Image (cartoon, rainbow, N blue to C red):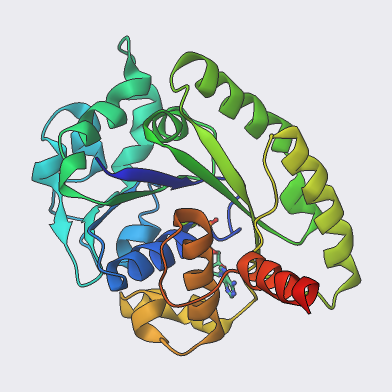
Length: 272
Ligand SMILES: Nc1ncnc2c1ncn2[C@@H]1O[C@H](COP(=O)(O)OP(=O)(O)O)[C@@H](O)[C@H]1O
Ligand SMILES: [Mg+2]
Protein backbone atom coordinates (compact mmCIF):
# COMPACT_ATOMS: atom_id res chain seq x y z
CA UNK A 1 0.00 0.00 0.00
CA UNK A 2 1.24 3.43 -0.91
CA UNK A 3 1.91 6.10 1.68
CA UNK A 4 -0.27 9.11 0.87
CA UNK A 5 1.07 12.63 1.44
CA UNK A 6 -1.04 15.75 0.78
CA UNK A 7 -0.01 19.39 0.70
CA UNK A 8 -2.63 21.77 2.02
CA UNK A 9 -3.34 25.40 2.86
CA UNK A 10 -6.44 27.25 1.75
CA UNK A 11 -4.21 30.17 0.85
CA UNK A 12 -2.99 30.25 -2.73
CA UNK A 13 0.60 31.00 -3.66
CA UNK A 14 2.24 29.38 -0.63
CA UNK A 15 4.01 26.59 -2.53
CA UNK A 16 1.66 23.58 -2.38
CA UNK A 17 2.01 22.75 -6.07
CA UNK A 18 5.73 23.54 -6.13
CA UNK A 19 6.33 21.19 -3.20
CA UNK A 20 4.17 18.44 -4.73
CA UNK A 21 6.07 18.55 -8.00
CA UNK A 22 9.41 18.51 -6.17
CA UNK A 23 8.31 15.55 -4.04
CA UNK A 24 7.23 13.61 -7.14
CA UNK A 25 10.59 14.34 -8.80
CA UNK A 26 12.66 13.53 -5.73
CA UNK A 27 10.86 10.29 -4.92
CA UNK A 28 11.04 9.19 -8.57
CA UNK A 29 14.77 9.90 -8.62
CA UNK A 30 15.23 7.88 -5.44
CA UNK A 31 13.66 4.92 -7.29
CA UNK A 32 10.14 4.98 -5.87
CA UNK A 33 6.94 4.55 -7.84
CA UNK A 34 4.86 7.71 -7.48
CA UNK A 35 1.30 8.69 -8.40
CA UNK A 36 0.49 12.42 -8.37
CA UNK A 37 -3.11 13.47 -7.83
CA UNK A 38 -4.11 16.95 -8.93
CA UNK A 39 -7.14 18.13 -6.96
CA UNK A 40 -6.89 21.78 -8.01
CA UNK A 41 -9.22 22.81 -10.88
CA UNK A 42 -6.43 25.14 -12.05
CA UNK A 43 -4.47 22.02 -13.05
CA UNK A 44 -1.12 23.56 -12.05
CA UNK A 45 0.42 20.29 -10.86
CA UNK A 46 -0.69 18.50 -14.05
CA UNK A 47 0.94 21.27 -16.11
CA UNK A 48 4.11 21.27 -13.99
CA UNK A 49 4.54 17.53 -14.55
CA UNK A 50 3.84 17.77 -18.28
CA UNK A 51 0.49 15.93 -18.15
CA UNK A 52 -2.50 16.59 -20.41
CA UNK A 53 -5.52 18.31 -18.95
CA UNK A 54 -7.79 18.40 -22.02
CA UNK A 55 -9.13 15.44 -24.02
CA UNK A 56 -8.23 12.92 -21.35
CA UNK A 57 -9.76 11.33 -18.28
CA UNK A 58 -9.23 13.57 -15.24
CA UNK A 59 -10.00 13.58 -11.52
CA UNK A 60 -13.43 14.98 -12.40
CA UNK A 61 -14.27 11.81 -14.33
CA UNK A 62 -13.01 9.70 -11.43
CA UNK A 63 -15.21 11.60 -8.94
CA UNK A 64 -18.21 11.32 -11.23
CA UNK A 65 -17.69 7.58 -11.68
CA UNK A 66 -17.19 7.97 -15.44
CA UNK A 67 -13.89 6.10 -15.22
CA UNK A 68 -11.73 4.39 -12.61
CA UNK A 69 -8.53 5.88 -11.18
CA UNK A 70 -6.55 3.37 -13.24
CA UNK A 71 -8.25 4.56 -16.44
CA UNK A 72 -7.35 8.18 -15.65
CA UNK A 73 -3.64 7.62 -15.02
CA UNK A 74 -1.16 9.26 -17.41
CA UNK A 75 2.54 8.43 -17.47
CA UNK A 76 4.95 11.36 -17.57
CA UNK A 77 8.76 11.53 -17.37
CA UNK A 78 8.50 12.31 -13.66
CA UNK A 79 5.74 9.98 -12.45
CA UNK A 80 2.19 8.79 -13.05
CA UNK A 81 -0.43 11.53 -12.81
CA UNK A 82 -4.18 11.89 -12.60
CA UNK A 83 -4.70 15.40 -13.91
CA UNK A 84 -7.32 18.06 -13.25
CA UNK A 85 -9.00 20.82 -15.18
CA UNK A 86 -11.64 23.46 -14.56
CA UNK A 87 -14.47 20.88 -14.59
CA UNK A 88 -13.29 19.79 -11.16
CA UNK A 89 -14.62 23.03 -9.70
CA UNK A 90 -18.15 21.67 -10.32
CA UNK A 91 -17.63 18.92 -7.73
CA UNK A 92 -18.70 21.09 -4.81
CA UNK A 93 -22.23 21.28 -6.22
CA UNK A 94 -22.33 18.05 -8.18
CA UNK A 95 -21.15 15.60 -5.53
CA UNK A 96 -24.12 15.39 -3.22
CA UNK A 97 -24.44 11.69 -2.44
CA UNK A 98 -23.94 10.08 0.96
CA UNK A 99 -20.28 9.21 1.51
CA UNK A 100 -19.01 11.83 -0.92
CA UNK A 101 -16.07 12.48 1.45
CA UNK A 102 -14.73 8.97 0.74
CA UNK A 103 -14.73 9.05 -3.06
CA UNK A 104 -11.00 9.72 -3.49
CA UNK A 105 -10.00 7.24 -0.80
CA UNK A 106 -12.05 4.51 -2.48
CA UNK A 107 -10.76 5.35 -5.95
CA UNK A 108 -7.14 5.26 -4.77
CA UNK A 109 -7.57 1.99 -2.86
CA UNK A 110 -7.77 0.20 -6.22
CA UNK A 111 -4.35 1.46 -7.38
CA UNK A 112 -2.58 1.95 -4.06
CA UNK A 113 -0.67 -1.33 -4.28
CA UNK A 114 0.94 -0.23 -7.56
CA UNK A 115 2.76 2.68 -5.88
CA UNK A 116 5.13 3.51 -3.07
CA UNK A 117 3.87 7.08 -2.68
CA UNK A 118 0.76 8.97 -3.69
CA UNK A 119 1.22 12.76 -3.60
CA UNK A 120 -1.91 14.94 -3.52
CA UNK A 121 -2.07 18.63 -4.43
CA UNK A 122 -5.10 20.49 -3.06
CA UNK A 123 -6.96 23.62 -4.19
CA UNK A 124 -6.76 26.93 -2.32
CA UNK A 125 -10.10 26.32 -0.59
CA UNK A 126 -11.62 24.20 2.14
CA UNK A 127 -14.06 22.34 -0.09
CA UNK A 128 -15.32 18.83 -0.72
CA UNK A 129 -12.09 18.30 -2.70
CA UNK A 130 -9.96 19.22 0.30
CA UNK A 131 -12.00 16.97 2.56
CA UNK A 132 -11.58 14.12 0.08
CA UNK A 133 -7.82 14.73 0.15
CA UNK A 134 -7.68 14.68 3.97
CA UNK A 135 -9.81 11.53 4.09
CA UNK A 136 -7.49 9.72 1.68
CA UNK A 137 -4.24 10.88 3.29
CA UNK A 138 -1.80 9.58 5.89
CA UNK A 139 0.32 12.71 6.15
CA UNK A 140 -0.52 16.38 5.69
CA UNK A 141 2.10 19.05 5.09
CA UNK A 142 1.12 22.71 5.40
CA UNK A 143 3.32 25.04 3.33
CA UNK A 144 3.39 28.67 4.43
CA UNK A 145 5.34 31.70 3.36
CA UNK A 146 6.87 34.13 5.79
CA UNK A 147 4.22 36.79 5.45
CA UNK A 148 1.70 37.71 8.09
CA UNK A 149 -1.23 37.31 5.66
CA UNK A 150 -0.24 33.73 4.93
CA UNK A 151 -1.06 32.89 8.56
CA UNK A 152 -4.65 34.12 8.38
CA UNK A 153 -7.45 31.58 8.26
CA UNK A 154 -5.52 28.92 10.10
CA UNK A 155 -8.32 28.48 12.68
CA UNK A 156 -10.58 27.33 9.85
CA UNK A 157 -7.92 24.98 8.52
CA UNK A 158 -7.52 23.53 12.00
CA UNK A 159 -11.27 22.95 12.36
CA UNK A 160 -11.40 21.14 9.03
CA UNK A 161 -8.41 18.93 9.84
CA UNK A 162 -9.78 18.06 13.28
CA UNK A 163 -13.27 17.32 11.88
CA UNK A 164 -11.90 14.99 9.20
CA UNK A 165 -9.75 13.26 11.79
CA UNK A 166 -12.76 12.76 14.03
CA UNK A 167 -15.32 11.65 11.46
CA UNK A 168 -13.59 10.28 8.36
CA UNK A 169 -9.93 9.44 8.87
CA UNK A 170 -8.50 8.67 12.30
CA UNK A 171 -5.08 8.00 10.76
CA UNK A 172 -4.66 11.57 9.52
CA UNK A 173 -1.44 13.10 10.84
CA UNK A 174 -0.13 16.62 10.32
CA UNK A 175 3.56 16.10 9.63
CA UNK A 176 4.36 19.78 9.98
CA UNK A 177 4.38 23.31 8.70
CA UNK A 178 6.77 23.91 5.82
CA UNK A 179 8.28 27.39 5.74
CA UNK A 180 8.67 28.31 2.07
CA UNK A 181 10.49 31.25 0.46
CA UNK A 182 12.38 31.34 3.73
CA UNK A 183 14.93 34.07 4.38
CA UNK A 184 16.43 33.91 7.88
CA UNK A 185 17.97 37.37 7.46
CA UNK A 186 14.63 39.17 7.44
CA UNK A 187 13.29 40.46 10.73
CA UNK A 188 9.75 39.69 9.56
CA UNK A 189 10.73 36.06 9.08
CA UNK A 190 11.54 35.76 12.78
CA UNK A 191 8.16 37.23 13.77
CA UNK A 192 6.26 35.02 11.35
CA UNK A 193 8.25 32.01 12.52
CA UNK A 194 7.17 32.62 16.11
CA UNK A 195 3.53 32.89 15.02
CA UNK A 196 3.86 29.79 12.85
CA UNK A 197 5.29 27.96 15.83
CA UNK A 198 2.21 28.88 17.90
CA UNK A 199 -0.03 27.69 15.07
CA UNK A 200 1.92 24.44 14.88
CA UNK A 201 1.28 23.92 18.61
CA UNK A 202 -2.45 24.42 18.08
CA UNK A 203 -2.41 21.87 15.27
CA UNK A 204 -0.50 19.41 17.41
CA UNK A 205 2.44 19.53 15.04
CA UNK A 206 5.75 21.38 14.52
CA UNK A 207 7.61 23.54 12.06
CA UNK A 208 9.59 21.22 9.84
CA UNK A 209 13.36 21.44 10.28
CA UNK A 210 13.89 21.83 6.53
CA UNK A 211 12.97 25.22 5.11
CA UNK A 212 12.79 26.11 1.42
CA UNK A 213 14.57 29.30 0.30
CA UNK A 214 13.20 31.60 -2.37
CA UNK A 215 14.80 30.38 -5.58
CA UNK A 216 13.95 31.39 -9.13
CA UNK A 217 14.55 27.89 -10.52
CA UNK A 218 11.45 26.74 -8.64
CA UNK A 219 9.37 29.23 -10.60
CA UNK A 220 11.06 28.28 -13.89
CA UNK A 221 10.80 24.47 -13.73
CA UNK A 222 6.99 24.20 -14.36
CA UNK A 223 7.31 25.86 -17.77
CA UNK A 224 9.56 22.96 -18.81
CA UNK A 225 7.12 20.30 -17.58
CA UNK A 226 9.78 18.60 -15.47
CA UNK A 227 10.50 18.59 -11.76
CA UNK A 228 13.16 20.72 -10.12
CA UNK A 229 15.33 17.60 -9.71
CA UNK A 230 15.62 17.32 -13.48
CA UNK A 231 15.53 21.02 -14.33
CA UNK A 232 18.18 22.14 -11.84
CA UNK A 233 19.73 19.06 -10.22
CA UNK A 234 22.58 20.97 -8.62
CA UNK A 235 20.52 23.87 -7.30
CA UNK A 236 20.05 24.72 -3.65
CA UNK A 237 16.31 24.15 -4.19
CA UNK A 238 16.93 20.53 -5.20
CA UNK A 239 19.13 19.93 -2.16
CA UNK A 240 16.55 21.49 0.15
CA UNK A 241 13.70 19.43 -1.26
CA UNK A 242 15.75 16.23 -1.05
CA UNK A 243 16.39 17.08 2.57
CA UNK A 244 12.68 17.68 3.11
CA UNK A 245 11.79 14.34 1.51
CA UNK A 246 14.28 12.63 3.81
CA UNK A 247 12.78 14.41 6.82
CA UNK A 248 9.21 13.40 5.96
CA UNK A 249 9.74 9.86 4.66
CA UNK A 250 12.99 8.76 6.31
CA UNK A 251 14.37 7.92 2.84
CA UNK A 252 18.15 8.10 2.67
CA UNK A 253 18.65 10.01 -0.58
CA UNK A 254 22.17 11.13 0.14
CA UNK A 255 21.33 14.33 2.04
CA UNK A 256 21.28 14.77 5.77
CA UNK A 257 18.39 16.55 7.44
CA UNK A 258 19.55 19.50 9.59
CA UNK A 259 18.24 17.67 12.63
CA UNK A 260 20.39 14.58 11.97
CA UNK A 261 23.40 16.73 11.18
CA UNK A 262 22.86 18.76 14.34
CA UNK A 263 22.42 15.76 16.63
CA UNK A 264 25.54 14.14 15.16
CA UNK A 265 27.53 17.29 15.84
CA UNK A 266 26.06 17.34 19.34
CA UNK A 267 27.06 13.74 20.00
CA UNK A 268 30.60 14.33 18.79
CA UNK A 269 30.94 17.31 21.10
CA UNK A 270 29.80 15.30 24.09
CA UNK A 271 32.34 12.53 23.61
CA UNK A 272 35.19 14.94 23.00
N1 LIG B 1 10.67 28.73 -2.86
C1 LIG B 1 10.23 29.39 -3.95
N2 LIG B 1 11.04 30.25 -4.62
C2 LIG B 1 10.62 30.94 -5.70
N3 LIG B 1 9.38 30.82 -6.22
C3 LIG B 1 8.53 29.98 -5.60
C4 LIG B 1 8.89 29.22 -4.45
N4 LIG B 1 7.83 28.48 -4.06
C5 LIG B 1 6.84 28.76 -4.94
N5 LIG B 1 7.24 29.66 -5.85
C6 LIG B 1 6.45 30.28 -6.94
O1 LIG B 1 5.36 30.96 -6.31
C7 LIG B 1 4.16 30.77 -7.04
C8 LIG B 1 3.12 30.07 -6.15
O2 LIG B 1 3.57 28.76 -5.84
P1 LIG B 1 2.59 27.52 -5.95
O3 LIG B 1 3.39 26.30 -5.66
O4 LIG B 1 1.84 27.55 -7.25
O5 LIG B 1 1.59 27.83 -4.74
P2 LIG B 1 0.17 27.18 -4.39
O6 LIG B 1 0.10 25.85 -5.07
O7 LIG B 1 0.14 27.11 -2.91
O8 LIG B 1 -0.85 28.14 -4.93
C9 LIG B 1 4.52 29.97 -8.27
O9 LIG B 1 4.76 30.85 -9.33
C10 LIG B 1 5.83 29.27 -7.87
O10 LIG B 1 6.63 29.00 -8.99
MG1 LIG C 1 -1.37 25.18 -6.42
